[in-house]
Length: 91
Image 1 (tube, rainbow, N blue to C red):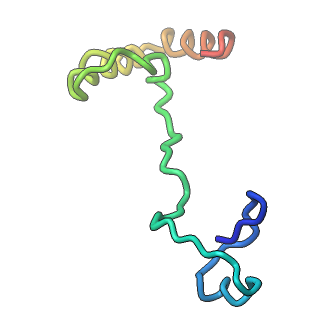
Image 2 (cartoon, helix red, strand yellow; image 1 turned 90 degrees about the vertical axis):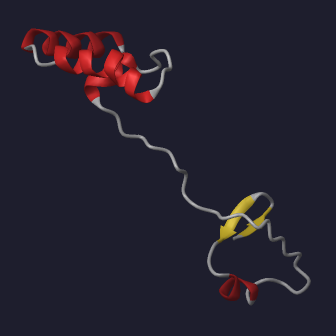
């Protein structure tokens, strides 16, 4: 990656970029890998109401929070009401 004044100018294999740099350009190797962020952006709609529920061990959390809310969504009236509440209240 070639940066100039804090802006990424070009990316690619070192061998390809080196020949395009001015002589005596300082080269820094941080030893780090540059990659896309490891952020999982998917959600399970029925669980949006329990986001940030108190932390527990995974299986206990699933048992106490996830299963009950997923079971509630089997009820059509609850499902429609939940969708309306989230639409109108930003939840």
